[in-house]
Amino acid sequence: MEGQSVEELLAKAEQDEAEKLQRITVHKELELEFDLGNLLASDRNPPTVLRQAGPTPEAELRALARDNTQLLINQLWQLPTERVEEALVARLPEATTRLPREKPLPRPRPLTRWQQFARLKGIRPKKKTNLVWDEVSGQWRRRWGYKRARDDTKEWLIEVPSGADPLEDQFAKRIQAKKERVAKNELNRLRNLARAHKMQLPSAAGMHPTGHQSKEELGRAMQVAKISTASVGRFQERLPKEKAPRGSGKKRKFQPLFGDFAAEKKNQLELLRVMNSKKPQLDVTRATNKQMREEDQEEAAKRRKMSQKGKKKGNRPGPGGKRKGGPPSQKGKRKGSLGGKKPSGLPGLGGKRKGGQHQGGKRRK
Amino acid sequence: MRPLTEEETRVMFEKIAKYIGENLQLLVDRPDGTYCFRLHNDRVYYVSEKILKLGANISGDKLVSLGTCFGKFTKTHKFRLHITALDYLAPYAKYKVWIKPGAEQSFLYGNHVLKSGLGRITENTSQYQGVVVYSMADIPLGFGVAAKSTQDCRKVDPMAIVVFHQADIGEYVRHEETLT
Image (cartoon, helix red, strand yellow):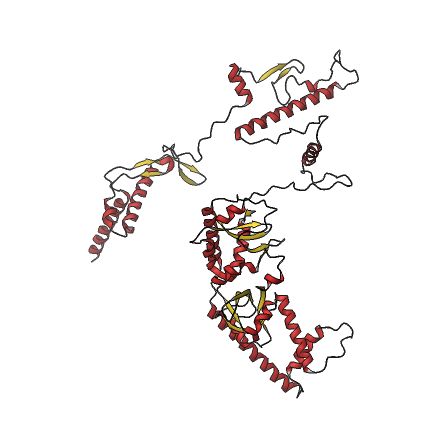
């Protein structure tokens, strides 16, 4: 008995081993192509098993996926490994599959004004060194930029040129000239950019003060100057009697009078379709039944209240109508008296009630 | 004169759909010609393409009206239907109210319809539903808003309002100056 069981155990162990090997080793007619850099395995075998599978090839697909993944992982195990923070990690090789571009190629930009001129004249960019020897400071300094070699705004002594006014501030003059150069450069850059994107720059055509500008031009120039601040003119003071400019918003654009009639019709039908689909479908019978039920409940509650009040406070003359008539009549014309006397008689109350209802109707409208 | 913008079209369609529901697409898409809505001096005109082309030859300040005026946009961009739209609402109306001959006069003077003047009302009218008012001889007299649903109309007392008046054909005489 024990011998048999031992033999059985051994046989079982052998069977398990064989299955494991079968699981790990996968037989394929065509070898797979691996791109381990992208963790990619391409199977070129013809999918005959799938075609024979029938309408639901779930099991066959799962088996195929399992086999291919097994092969990929076998390949991964053959890579050189290293240890990173208590984890065994395989080092992947370079990816061989080229992925397509995410965005399209950039369009060629139009040449800037300088580039056009240089091309015309045949000027090539001369190779220049980055650093220049600066005698004054006795060190190598940049050709341009921060702490550059020959910065004329940083000179401590400037000789007054022979023709110039002796009281003029030469230092300020140099700083001013630099600011103007910077502004001009910026303007040209923006112009190049606008040309590249085919946009229109806000032009300063009529803004320079000549002697002869019309009233409208001056007004326009004044408006532009007003909004050319960092907060777009919000905190600019106005003269005492100056009014805010009208019509400075965006002009609305409407469709042309005889546009495409078919397109107009299509748009309107589409709008109608959307409107109808959004409306909740009212189940009318259910709604009316619900309402009738509510009304019946209200009436029953009222009857119960009436009977309770009758029991508690003894016999009271006059129906509930008189009490109902009370509040609306008090709401009415009580300007003179201080609310002491109530109008006598039911017909008056009934009339007041009608008036109240009419008012309610009008208000609802 | 200009076509309506999306927003204006939506507001107007919502108003008209309260009276004629999905039959509105029969107004937009007609088999017998192209009809369109145009806005002129805040009023909406429903006009055929032929008439529109003729009307475009008249300068804006001299043009009073063209086609059928459906209504106008108020200063706060709400749409108000005028009685002149009745010819297009009446055939497509979903919910109708017939009033007795005695109450016709009162309605045509601009008063609301009381329960005592109510002849017939379509079944399943909900409260505040847009309705078209007819005489007992099936002549459209105007339109309004149902103050009570059909169920409530049966229970309510005879002096209660059942239809709020919005427009009636008596306005052709009373408001002659303002209608175009």
